[in-house]
Length: 246
Ligand code: FPP
Image (tube, rainbow, N blue to C red; front, side, top):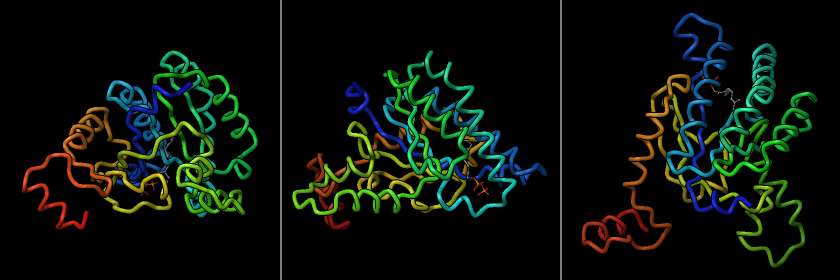
């Protein structure tokens, strides 16, 4: 059903810098997260027009439970509200939402809200929006390995399906992280094997649709080789490929 989205870009975003955005304005961190939701709305609306078929957003990592209880509660409240308020918008825009990560540690009403939005948005054909909640890539890989135990004919594609939990999700083409940090933080480690990386100093609440468009424009100029020789056979490109060991 999602085959039209499969052939489009998969962009993943580590939405970093909400806390600093708020602190710099003398505001509580939760206000930064609230403004972060506005940035989420902007990129979700812009994504289909920019050729993005799958958008995976890192909203809450398994390690984020280590944050103060008040901040965790504020985030859970925002996620809960997001599930409640976005369903109608998703229906209008043809967005299909799924959540990745553990469900068993989320508040029960949030887990139920996610299931409800997943069900009512399941027919969406314009964008597959994946929200990573209580997510750890290492945990996803370990669980996939456990469920594959004993399979001696396992292929990378088969293992990919076990990790992603769905057959129609392509690997990540482009990973963006905001706020100047340059690390993966246990996000989509398998799926990013050949993704292009883009780091920007912009704090997440300041990230606009135009920023996403500019990042994609720059991405389109990149020469992705997947370990092979470059598409363009000119001498300079070939030399470069050898220099990086491609
Ligand atoms: C990182 O900023 C951001 C988070 C841990 C939460 C991300 C959540 C949102 C953008 C809001 C809701 C999202 C959805 C999809 C409903 P930080 O707190 O680590 O910022 P800092 O590094 O400046 O402290």
